[in-house]
Image 1 (cartoon, rainbow over the protein chains, first blue to last red):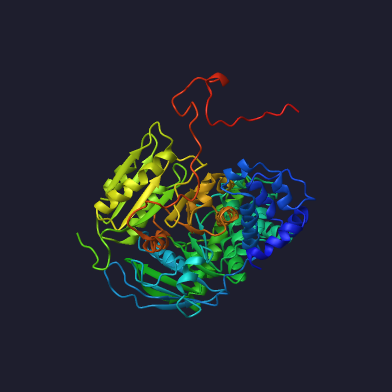
Image 2: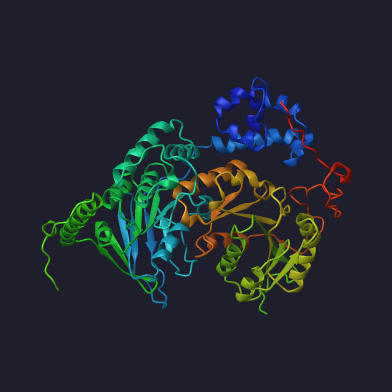
Length: 344
Length: 241
């Protein structure tokens, strides 16, 4: 339906029924300061009784309000998921800081995890950025990103409005003054999910399963600990974000089950790229991109031997986790609780 | 000065950038100019402000030609519209290929956006979830809404914020730009490149009316009380119920 098609509906149907059919219309009316209205009347009838000066403050006359309202209904009646399914992204190499060609062509599919490793300042974030803006040999690195094996058309590249890529980083915080439940409901509303209670409940459960310490639905998001916040962000990104690609900039934070976190993200058919210094995460990925001097130096596929190494690292990690829990519980850490390591 | 043979030296692209104080306008402009990669001196900035501004230092550091105009006792919105045509003439004389006007100090009632001229509104993620609904014409009539400081809030808050923007201005493009690293500025630069080439602003129309003024306080009255009030006034009726 086009905006004009809504005009007939809006002109004949009482606003109360419109609000039931298009729940978001409440926000539109509130934004126009039309909040205490007789719901048995139609919008044109209501506007008849509104002072023209008030409408003028918003830059409208009565007719324009109706048209604008219909445009609003049109915009929010579109299918929320207009981003087509992404079956792969491909990174074609550009140049490093010295101008040398990067010899890579790497295709990543949903469910795959790729880690990005390299010294600080080597260009890990730049690679994530190239992916975010779907670089077409027009960024400083001259890399090219393909979607589903072909060049994304210009309009798509610019119209997705940051919806292609979700980002998670260590520096992110919650700033809204809402409880966990209100927060998740608000996010679900913005995704236009009609039955939010189920997904909110699921998100909450997953977040709590990742967090070292449990929290409740009525905890304020701003009062969550670092680990709890990170857990909620991961669960929310996996289950409520529309973006098919997730870029993670560091995830090493105490109080989050990182192994589970990666599993949950991948399990929801996301493409996951994470820049990390953490051996546990780097080796958990299917592949790792090594960045040196602004360019991709190589792509390493995690070998079977490395998977065995990973298990050892995980064992060490869980020993540390145990010790942390003992200390937090006020316990005494016995020397025997730590396995013997060869001293250097 | 190097100029492209096909580009009319008497014309230039104009971009109006507006936004609340400290939302990151200057940082966004600086990063976008860097992303444009044009030769030095081909992009100029006019900063419209109320009383003081320190942004010229940042433009000077980056060797970007700039001019600051203070509204002083004049309403900043009226001051903007009175002088923007002069700014365009200055930019053309200077041979810029792009001129950016940065306006701060405008009240949320107003917007500097002009029909046919690429209009940008900059707001930041930290400013509160309902801010997009409160800003008014500056946001409602913009072509592109740039959201800054997204690197320090959660993905969910970015998505909800963008949603609230869309509720107010469904037709605008929403871009996330990081004013510190410049992430996202590349996309904004692409829009700047496609902005309309103009020779003058004369006879173009503002997208939204300026505030109605001329009351006694406009002309310097400072005393409070009905006896001192004249001209265009709007009185609130306080309910006793």
